[in-house]
Structures are given as structure tokens and as C-alpha cells.
Image 1 (cartoon, rainbow, N blue to C red):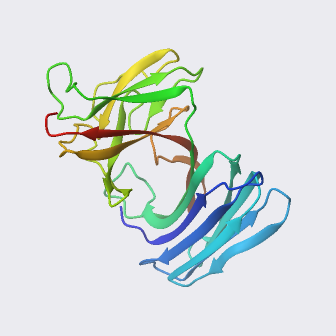
Image 2: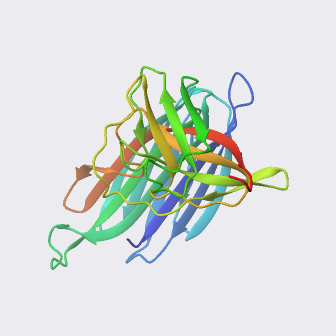
Length: 279
């Protein structure tokens, strides 16, 4: 799906003190659009102060801000052009000290007015506004590497892991609620690098989520990944809400504009392991 107008806001949270600190990076770009459009992003801080962090019609721009407060932040995004006039949406996120990254993405584009009719040539301006917060995992959610397992029938090349939920929350996978698929980083020159995954298939049969007091297997992408001997880290995101990562819902529509939006919270669970030639 082609982007016509995009504003990316990346909030990287690096909590260093009781007050909390994080960097706010705004990455703005404009692609093919039928008329000049103005994007505005206003940020309201937990102490009640506000700042306009973006307000322009340029094609590309990056800005970086430093956030020092814990609490609720409010983002208001406004879109304006001669076709649809002016429209806006507001969303919030909260920094508690557990977050290490918050990504806010706003995409604007032209799309068919009637999405169910491929022959319909009428179009409408559409905005996609999502906030995805990434937090540290609960200490009651644990994961271990299964060095000798390749599935019940050897159907996966591995590596395989076991996720144990000792919390009171029900846990959901990134792409399908009952499956926990992640990516790999490899240890190179004193640090983990890369985010290696594989094919994601969302047509798998339904499986229940991970209930409290239960365990589930986890692996790389949907079909595993053969790896060479070395040191790795498996990166797995889970949520306590039933959301497919990156999905947005229709929340508002007029004759000239359509908004889709979501606010999601994902927790990163990691497991470091090492494979040797004899494995």
C-alpha cells in the first residue's frame, strides 16, 4: 500500500533516573500527493506544558527532542490540504519508567472511498495514527532455550524456546494470539547485531493465548530458522491485550476524511543462548 504522506515519530526511551529520560525523534516525509498538505504535531507534557514539534509542508525533515518526565504525554496530529480541509486526531501514551521505546506513526494517503468495491474510483484522504509502546517484560514471564528440541516430529529447524507465564495476565503473540514468533540477534565483535527473522504466515489454525500458569513453545518467525554455531539472543514480543501488531481500526469518517488509529503496548522478552558444532 503506497504511502502518499508520512510522518514518523519515534520515541526512544532510555530511563536513567527517577524522573525518566527519553529521546523523541520526528522523521517526516512527503511522497506523491495531489496537493500541498500541511502536517502539524503538538505534544502536551505531563506537567501541562506543550510544544509544537512539527508544523510544515516540507517533503522531509527530522527533529529530535529529549523527554525528562514520567507520566502521560498527549500527541495531537493535524492534517490540512485543499481537498479535505483540516482534520485532527489526539492520542496519548504514558511513560512509567519501564518503557525503552515508543513509536508513533502517522501516515496520510489517498484511498478508495468504498474499500469493498475495486471498481469504485472515488477516493478520500485517509490518516493512520498509531502509538506502539515497548516496555520491559514482567519478571513473572520467563523463557528458556530448548537446545535438544526440534518439534514433536522434527518439523522445525529450530531454535525452539519455552515461554512460561507465572503472571496473572493472559499473554498474546505479535501476529496471532496463540503463537509466539520472534527474531534472532547474533553476537558479533562484543555486541548483538541484526534482527533476523523469517516468513510470517497468519493463516495458521487458531490457538488459545498463553493463560496464567501455562507454558507455550516459541520459535523464529512462523517456520523456524536454521542457524550456525554461535552466540545468539532470541527477541520475542508479547502483549497483555489481544492485538495484532500494527493493526489499526476505523475510528472516524466524514465525507472528505477517514481516520484509523490504535494504541498498543508490547513487552520484549529475550533469551540468550549459544549453539555449538555438536548440537
